[in-house]
Length: 573
Image (tube, rainbow, N blue to C red; front, top):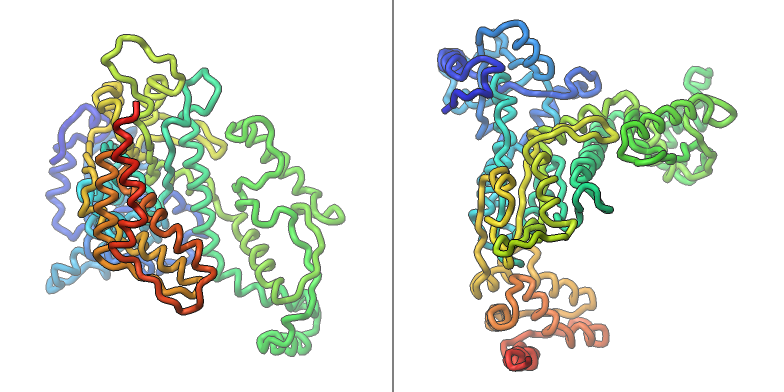
């Protein structure tokens, strides 16, 4: 349901939009926003989007039709300046009357979607399933994260009239230490190729104090986005560059193709394909900063003036790079500084491939796509946010430079502002912020009310019970038991754990969490290392193929002194 708010007065009203949306009788097709739609290099593979798309793109696509709303010229021009209008299918693409309902749900586009849009198209059930492979329990946190990720993709399918009005719903995760808050963020980062940054709130200080201010969060996110964009473009161009490697090697062996040595060139090509010239040495002119530059807009300059994140410093650096490119090559030739290296053909292939990719990357506008990816799909995870809160039970104001002042600085960042980076101005209006904290000494209500309002979705994670600890030892794919078995297996020793032993380990860890200090799943590391200490020390001296079994009695024997110490600790003053 669309609410008619004052925010919609800049464009068509919500009632007009909703009425136009319902009156569409033709099948609805997906509208896309492509920040690099004007670049020819981003359209060279029209079928890649269909080949690489996940099942979620086909089975669970939420489509949006064209919106025909009457607006004045100023509104129309402001909305269409940076949003591509929805794609209208041609007559040949219109589904027939007998097409099944499942076919009607398939979204088709003629332009290739940017990679950072396709990577956030996983369905919530798929996200929860992937997180459950590594994290036990905490279904509410998994669902909240999955919905937040899916909503990023859903927003991209909205009509242009609503696209800029929908902002992400930021999340606050509350739970004791060791229950999986940080692990959710870490696995979420691996699951999505969208720009993702995890930071600790305690690393930042209030503006005016020595230390890092919160604007550095966006600058670090832009570095991540730039690296992802460069990697994605390099993979896209790698196939085309591989076709040129053989020709470049032949040029070095027999000269250019137009030099009249075609017969000799073909004979060398045959020997090259048969692998007879792998040890033949070539002399290459290799750029000194090969691999460091990011194409035309990459951050590969060796000279940095002043603050590396300043736009003025970056402009001066770019100018010096251009001046260096005029006569920086060998013998005064145009191009970056190079050095001659001799290497066999087997090693030269990869070097020539990198050189060719770098040449192709000069035609790609990396900055534009990286900024768009960070603004539209960037995810920032702020950990330990409770450490910058102070209890309101005391009237005295904290003098800590990493306390409430940092909360005040976070307010405009989370709400939406523009940050100046070396890649240009970056808006944070549509970035997703996920904060987490244990809140042992303080309560969530001790945060600034304005910051609480900017984190509307609250998810409480439960403490781990004995059964949860047992599941952590057995269910995840790379659990602690599997890790220990594989580590000892490298010595030729077969290690096995009885189920009773695992139950005893979970029971002991839960007991220590209750009696000493509740550190959650991290307690399992302490218990497991105490049990494996003697076995790990003696494994190198054991005979190969020897079997070592960890039993319940062995666990009790190894942990007896730990339990006795914990029982006496409460009597020590």
